[in-house]
Image 1 (cartoon, rainbow, N blue to C red):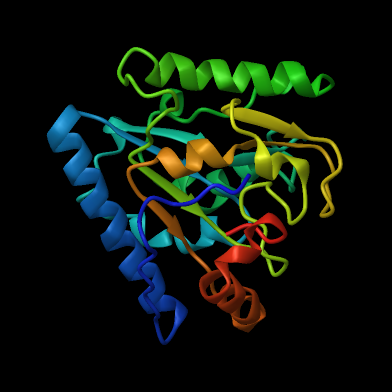
Image 2: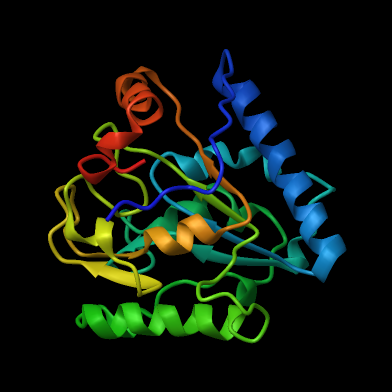
Length: 228
């Protein structure tokens, strides 16, 4: 069964990465202000890959209210938090170590559970339940913003073309044992969680993404084979 976004996508293009970085920072700043003005906090989920380096426009930005942020990860590789493959490590190196965000506002996976994928994903889902269940009546959490990247094969989060998790309809967090891209073990937010967010932004840069982005936008009926 395919999952469909509630609104048609809006496409923005930029002539270089510097303009992309500054425009993304402005977009995040606006989303943050609206959320904090409305409810006093900003819930955001971020992915890894090339995305962390695209967030450098937030460094030194006096409009960012870091103490109101609650940060989660769209997906995470099942490795120690200081491992080069860890999305938490990538985001910390590129952004969080350079801004005054309270450590307790960044919600990483439990590194003591790396040997049990089901327990690891359940524990991360419980973090989301703690954040959202008492505040939202929806069946799924409603993030203020989810920031996603996209691989050259069209995958986003750790949801890969043709994988059985594309049809998951109940869980908030699921695990992957057989990722076609290393490392093979990961946890990921599911499509229903992504689609319930107030805002979702895909950030893609470089010629390697052009062909697959065209397929995602122009042929969404391929969604069962290609995430997007």
